[in-house]
Image (tube, rainbow, N blue to C red; front, top):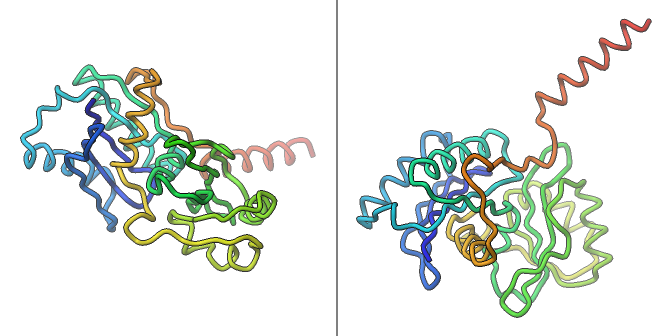
Length: 241
């Protein structure tokens, strides 16, 4: 089983080719470039270095959201285009689950957090049992304070990772009454190899979709949509007066 995995849901752009027993190649960049500039050149470099025929892959795993609206659209368009060109199925891996796979085998609750702005995070709560990821709380957009209360109620050790950690670390440290740690630098951001490992499990379970069916999971409306709704609300109030 061979999976091409892509993740552009956050600040990191990452591409990997993963098999059940090994990661063949992984290219990850966390730098000030748009993902539209990086994803395909990174994939092209991997193909050249490994002399890989992309027709030999079984499926394309894409980090399907939540995350950056622009990043998700770029990743989605890339995966859909490759799926159509190669005639391969897509595997929609929830972004937060992909992050949780970075800490495979942890004996603590795993809580990835991505900065969603406005004191909110994209998050979920997971644990590994019998070599499988179990969802304690499915991915969601939530206020940081609400997340802290959820974790305090669960009353278990928890490990955090994701780009929300440096933003909300102070609030977590101040509010948590449970034991907690933060993932190290090599595991605290998106990794396509983790998306690929999750994708292999999804593929075994028959959880695939066509390129035409795939849509990112944003969890909430974009800032532009919120602003438009607010303008229409104000306009409606003005007209009613």
